[in-house]
Each structure stands twice: as structure tokens, then as C-alpha cells.
Length: 467
Image (cartoon, rainbow, N blue to C red; front, side, top):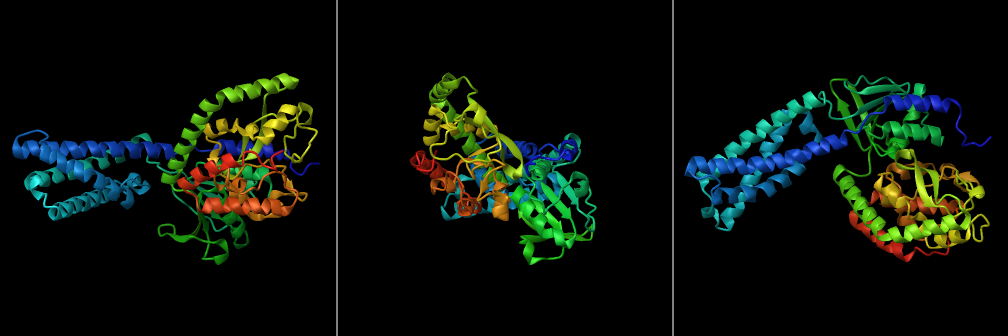
């Protein structure tokens, strides 16, 4: 029997996972941050406009508004870095108030410092600016208190998803967290079963924090899985160098200590930038390439009357499965849905139009749809079929770090591809070369590097290993 065929119990365990999946709270928090940004801009201007009315008898006197508009960008800069718009600010309005007032005082001091040295103090009314700052401070406090009330009312006070996985450890009674049993869901950190990792990836996808309580001998295995899932992961443990701990988190009220073993490869700002880049490029590319894609679809249909698209299950972010789209390049009766047999030169499974679109990489264009759906990125580690092998070994059997490449969304192209690591994986080195490039890309991600890789991809669309 095929080693990749899931057992009958998999369907039951998958249903159990579906029952405990939680919605993402990140978008909800992001919307709240945007509203706070807009509210702060409005209250800044209203406060200084009202201050000029009180002091000079004129609403929105130009000098007062100049002070507000000069101070606001500085306030935003400081507020972004001191946590005024962070997660803790949604959880604790007193904390949020303290951070906002600190940002206000520092921005006022910096503006006054610059005005002194540029001899532009006379452009501002000292009394008007002082009143404006006082009114702004009062409004900042009021808005933070209002947001805290709305969070409690609309979200039941829940601003983040916390998950505790009990795998036979000492336990972790985390208030407000969902706790599950690893045994009940069939989670074995030492296993390389892709179906188990798919279930775990789906469960962890929208979690903001994952804490694992397990015996000492299973901690290293869990550390590897948490890193591969791309989540903020902690393990209840004494300090252990082998786990590659990033820090220690002490829970004084629980009398517990955890090791932070993963934080996810990209912070919120980086994820927003990468997603915006993906959406913009994929949307524009679909518009520009639409005539070509329609022509290719028609030629595929005319050749043998079979389906235009080939849909194959691939390993995506967090080791969860997703359906990847390609233009069909092989004969319908010879399609390889598990990816057990890599295409080779002069492969008799490939159709005439299929040979052309594979050589030119046109067969990959439907993956732009995967990008818009949020399942892939323009640039990232290329997604592999679960049956892919190198030297008759599954990829994860060649190198256990293989799972870590899935902490980011897979890409249409990647660093490995522009370095020439494409085509069949007959040798183990064919896989390790790609893996090394993928892990390097994850560790050194930047938007400029994504743009560079995308531009370099144009030069390798036709490649000697593309067949």
C-alpha cells in the first residue's frame, strides 16, 4: 500500500480539527489599528482647532493647525515604535493611554527642539499649543477608554487566539486559551506523516500563540514543528540549548516558564507589505496576460478535448495542503496527481502544446489565481507535491529541515529557481540545494529581494531543466 495513503482514522481526526478551528483575529485587530490611526489624526486637529478658539477666539487658527500638522507625523513615528498601536494596547487601556501620552510628550518636545534651533518658535502660540496638547491628551485617553469598551462588548474581551497543546507534559492552565490533547487529535511531533502535518497546520493557522506542554524527550521535535508552522510557539521547559530557544517567557501568575522557540518569519508590517505586493503584481499580471492565457487554454482544449487546468494538492504554508493550479501539459490518462514521477526530457506523457508551455513556464501562470486567493506568494519556496522524491526518498526523509521551508507561503518563483535549481530531483543534492536557498530566503526576506528575484525570473523562464 502506498505510504502516503491516509488511514481511515484520518477522516475522523480531520473532522475533529475542523470543529476546533478558530477565525483569524489579525484582520480584526488591523482594522482597529487603522481606525485608531484615523481617530488620532482627527482628534489632533480638532483639539488644536478648539484650543485656538478658546485662546484666540478663532476656530482652526492657521498657527495652531500648523503645530498640529507638524506634530502628528512625529507622534505617529514614535507611537509605532513604542507600542501605542500594539496588541497590549488593545488588551489594557491604561497601558494604551500611558504609551499614547508618552508619544505625545516626546513628539511635542522634539517639535519644540527643532523650532528652537530653526528660530521658528514665533510661528507658534505657546499658550495655544499648550492648550492644544492638553485637549489632545484628554481625547487620547477618552478614545483608548472607548476602544477598550468596544473590545469588551464586540469581542467579549478576546483580542488574540491562544492554544495549549497537552502532549503529556506538566500541564499549562492558561486562562482564556483553548487546550487540546495531542493524543486525541493524533499529533505526533516525531512523525513525518504529511496528513498529520496538514491537520496540525490547519489548527495552528490562525493562532497568535501556541504553548506546548510535553515530556523532555519530545521538546526538540515540537520545537521543529512550531518553527515550520511559522507561529509564535513556546514550550513549557527548562532552558535547553538544543531547542534553539529565542527567549524565555515567565508566567508569574501560573508559576510556569516557557521557552520561546519560534516567532514566525515575518512581523505584521512585513506580512502586510508582502501581501500588498503579491496582490498588486498578481492582479496586474492577470490583466496583462489574460489574452495569452485564453489562447493557451483554447489550444489545450483543441488538442485532446481534456480539461484545461491541472489541479494538484501541494504542501503550503504551515505544512497544510492546498490545491495548486497549472495549465495541463500531460495526457489526461497519464496525469500524476501525487507527483511521484518527475517529468523528464522527451517524456511521452507530455502533449505537444504541453511541451511548449513547460519549456517556457507558461504552464505556471494559473498560479496567479492561487496568489490572489492568498494561498501562494509571487516569491517564496516553490510548493512540492506530497509524493515528490529524491533518490527514491521523500523530501522530508532526505533532510528533516525540509518542513521549515513551509513557514512562509509558497511562491510562483523563488531564490532556488533563479539560481538554476529546477527540474527533476534525481539526486539528494538536487533537494538539499533547493532547501538551502529556501531557508536562506526565509531568513533574509525583504521586499527589495522579492522584486530582485521576480526580475531575475524573467531571465530563467526558459531553462535547460524546464521540461
